[in-house]
Structures are given as structure tokens and as C-alpha cells.
Amino acid sequence: MNNKHFIDQLSQLVATPSVSCTNPKLDMGNRAVIDLLANWLEPLGFNIDIQVLPDQTNKANLIATLGEGDKGLVFAGHSDTVPYDKDRWQHDPFSLTIDDNRAYGLGATDMKGFFPTVLAAIQPFLNIPLAQPIIIIATADEETSMSGARALVNQKQPKAAYAVIGEPTSMKPIRLHKGIAMEAIRIEGKAGHSSNPALGNNALDVMHDVIGELKQFRSELQQHYQHAGFTIEVPTLNLGCIHGGDNPNRICGRCELEFDIRPLPGMNLDNLREDIDKRLKIIAAEKNIIIERNSLFSGVDAFEQDKNSPLIKTVEELTRQVSGSVAFATEAPFMQTLGMDTVVMGPGSIDQAHQPNEFIDLSEIKNAVDVLQGLIKKFCLKNNDNQ
Image (tube, rainbow, N blue to C red; front, side):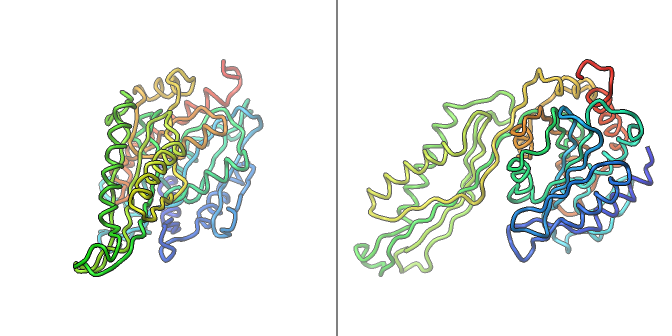
């Protein structure tokens, strides 16, 4: 492997900002990253398909395909990063810095470092016949809405048999993760002078009842659902933040709560929301008050890949590690929806993601390249038992 080439490509990716953020003032497009990857891959013989996201001309997905067939191997990653706190970085977050065999830069681990790893892995296979294609996907907005992955599902593309989501797992294969929903509950009461409660309808008082109901709901979920494959074996419901009222001597006229739910595989997000809505409707009727629930984004389903899948068995053999689970959500469920056996696995540690001085340890890259090449040999070359 050419370490200098890897560093040069990662340097260019890090130097190309692609922050994805729910705050429009911080949000950026990813098109420059997509174009950079496309310009690298097209001369290598890849067919390039850049798909602009609906109503977001500065954001796009890349599907780059080498070879033909509908049972190929996908290497997928997101091209966006989270925002950054520049004053907390010891280096320029957009200028790759090498120190003690670590490459520092925004997105170096999560997850721009995966793309030059894949580019290094494919080099021996560029000029030999493939039984099934190698497909490289780069998506938009994974860090916020997953709109890039959702667009792929809507387009029913690509067609393939296997997918590797290159999130940083230190190359441990991951076949399980919880889902996530983020919800907001808004209560519209009636303000009034606090000396006489009858003058209003206290939204904060009612939110107390709502919180009690959510805690009861959480307890019931955890009694009914467990999965030994996770460190935290039960679904969680976290009360994240609350805002309400404006003064101690006024009846609170409005209150809002935001929370998340992290369901286990087999739990349906829409069903969970329906259960919550039924409970809120009862409280609203009892208190004669308006209660609304809104989803802060569409959510991500939980993910579980069969441990007996040929993909899981292969990555366990190549990495010499038993597949496991993580707590964070990924684009894996979307690849499964497209019909692919899927594993989450990539170089770098999730411990370095989403924080100042993010880095990827360069000592991990050779092993990552070797594992990816093993997958290509298994699933894309002729004369093996998967064709």
C-alpha cells in the first residue's frame, strides 16, 4: 500500500468542507467532495452516476461502478461531517496534520478516511475481469437527516448483494445497532396571573404528567423487549431537553420537551409513535389542553444482519473477530432495504468522532485494505462459490 497516496487523498478530502447541520447557518453542501471522488474514480474505469438530492442542488450522492452484474459488493460511506469548534482544535480542522502516525482533521475518522482506504484496496483489481461489480457509494447528510441514503432507497439503487458501511469500528464487524427517533412534544396552555390558578391552564404542570407517562412507557418497553446482543440490552428513551414559561409569577402558557427513543431490531418506529400519541390524547382530554407530538426527523430503523450471512461469516474470518453491536445508528438499514446483506466496518475509532482533534491512526490502514481486498476476492472475482 502507498501510504503517501493515502495521505494525499485524505488531505484533499479533509480540505474540502462538507459540514451537515440542522442549523442552516452552519450547513454546507457536499457536492465538492462528490466531484473530487468522481474525478479520482472515473479515470480508473468506474461508471460515474452523480445523483443530486431533490430540492438541494448543492448536495448529491455518488454511485461509482466497476464491472457489471446485480450481485456485486458495495463500499458505502457518507461524505459529510459534523460541525466543529475551531477554538478547541490544536490544528486547522481543514488541513490534515500528521503527528505520531496519526492523521488529524475534521472527518479523518468519521468518515472521509474510508474512501482512500477503498481506493487503495481496489488497485489490484482494476485491470482484471470481475464476475460481479465493485460499487463505491458516497452519500449526503448522514449526520443529520440521512437524506442521501433515503434518496437511494427511493431510486431503488444500486442493485447489489453485499454492502460494507465503512463507519469507524476499528475494523470490528458490526451486524447490530439500535435505531433512533427524535421527537418533540409541545403543550399549549393558557397564561395568567400565578396568584389564581383558575385564570390559566399550566402547560408545565401538564408536562409533568406527560413525562410521567413517557417514563411509564419506557418501563413497559424495557419489560417487553430485550436483546442480549447489545451492551444495553433494552430500548432506551431519553428525556433530552425541556423549555417552558417565562416568569415565576406567570402561569406557564407553553412548554416543549424533546426526547429520543433507541429501539431494538424488530421494533417499528411508527408503531412507537402511535403508542405515544394514544397516551398523549388521553392526557389532553383529561386536562382540556392542546398537546402535539412532532418528529424532529424521520428516524433510522434498528439494524440486524443474520449472523449466518455469507458476508458476516467472511468478515469474521478475514478480521479474526466475532461480529458485534454498536449503540450509534448508521445507513445500514437503508442498504438492507435495497436487498443487500450488510455489515458496518471501517478503520478508525468512533471514540475520535464528533470531537476536536479528530484523528485516524495510520497504523490501521494496511489491515483495513487487506480485509477489503479479501472481500473483493470473495464476492467479485470469478471462480468462487458465491458466483
